[in-house]
Image (cartoon, rainbow, N blue to C red; front, top):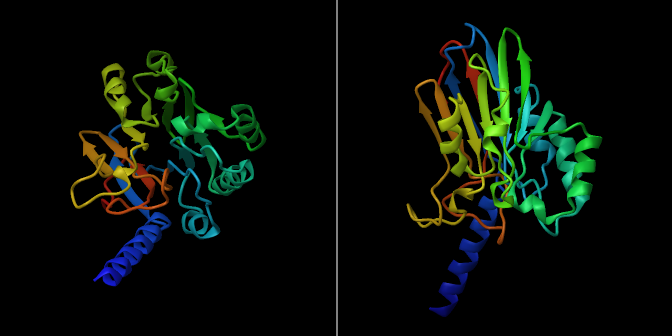
Length: 255
């Protein structure tokens, strides 16, 4: 009896370890009224990398499919070698221009050295600010806020340069700020991670809700389970994930 319990425990542990290091690329799409017919803008969203190392398999599966990359915070955490963090940045740079917002665990490392990596590889940080992307005939604006756990979120400042005609993408490490963003403006796409889907779930029960992609009228909200793990390198019922999101002006197959 005891041996059977031990064997079951070992099998479950190995299965949870396997799930934690899976590569799952989810694809989503949303029609945007303001985009021209035939236009498609593809972005890659990845959050909560933490201790994981991005390998060539993931990069090769996405190469040529996206226009930009957005890192939704928790790129790293305490104890992660900066060499690994730089490796991950170099991998993501192969896919396109990289944009980044702070996560709470990113504050655990030497921020000055982290900043030097971003400067070296031309990664654009969005800290309570926005940036305009000229994409064909559409003006797409990314709005990013500081990590909420730092107490330095200035959400009105982040939206200061937003115009009514912008196609708006709002990025926050934690989805708790979606509500604030929608009170100020009308984002077409809202992106966040942080919750890990609870990381370990027993059926419908978990510390946090499982990740979701929800489409509303002319807008969508993505809360990702994240790519990596924190605390223990285990998952159950909340698979690791990263995302390709297509914003388009004409209907395409929903994914």
